[in-house]
Amino acid sequence: MKKALFALSTLALASAGAFAQSSVKLYGIVDAAVRIETNQGADKSSVTSVIPGGLSESRMGLDITEDLGGGYRALANMEHRFRSDEGGQAATEFWRQAWVGLLTPMGRVTLGRQYNVLFDLTTGNHASYRYSPYIENFKPEIGNLLSGRQSNMLKYALTAGGLTAELQYSASEKGTVTLGEKTTGGMARYVMGGFSVGAGVLNSKTTSGKDAKATVLGASYTSGGLYLNVSRTKNKFDAAYELGSAYATAFFKGASLVNAATAKDRTMTSFGATYQITPQFNLGAQYYDVSQNHYGAPKTDYKLYSMVGDYALSKRTDWYVEYDRVSMSSTSTMIFANGARSRNGYMTGVRHRF
Figure 1: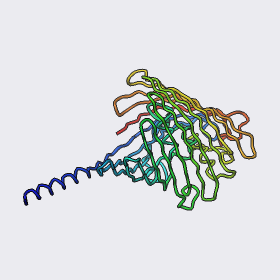
Figure 2 (figure 1 turned 30 degrees about the horizontal axis):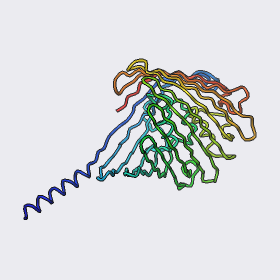
Figure 3 (figure 1 turned 135 degrees about the horizontal axis):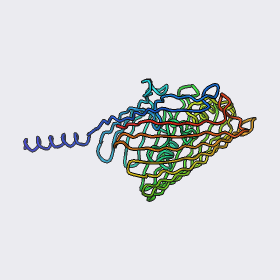
Figure 4 (figure 1 turned 60 degrees about the horizontal axis):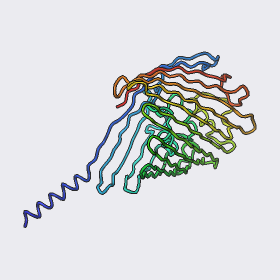
């Protein structure tokens, strides 16, 4: 009898250990490029620089999972972004993502600093490029998402068949405009074969009570080596919205702009294609048409273009060349701080993923 009880106890302990299996995965990207921009200097001269991320922002992170048994898993993520050109960190926050959560049969719940629902929709549903959701150094599609991440967020996600839905809420805790945004939002995406279609909305309120709203509608189609995408996004800002300027400069990777803070609303239509010419070589192009109304000033119209050729040197390393252009109308209220209304960018770099 004692032997039987000992055997049962040993089996129970072994089963508990099996249920509590956990894994910690180190991952990252190191990306650096040489970039030339016209009309960039104070005298509208061209500027050549080594940049810390052409296609992707360099990062290093930890993905943590623990099997709790019964279809439940504990999840956690910590991700740091850094500047590969000089070794510094890429933003004020050391951890660009820092969250913990549970995966259950009824969905996934995560808490902390993480991607917002519109970022998940845009990069997962109608990404601009098949081999990279967007160009890190030229990303108009991300500029319309009211920041790609929010702090103090509670997010719920559920996938059932081809349908994925997400809801988010972030609390306004910090008492500052940039850290104290209160957000609510949701998105839904449906995938059927090579087609994917989705829509989402996000509302943001600063600590001073100013509101901003973003809506996104997009679709994509994949067939063999061909990938097509189309989307339409819209932002609405209260008058004197404190982050209006920051969200405008997100279109241009932090470029200095005149009259960016007076934006009332912004609408962007975008479409593009990627084609896998060989197993190693992809070629893609994207077009963006933007119309922006201002409080007390004429509207701003601008068009943006990008093209990328990407060659896989190995499973983890690729070499890319890129061209992009910004062209603002002659009557635009918002222009570059040096008075220029257009800018061309040329870039080539190497990206390694691990």
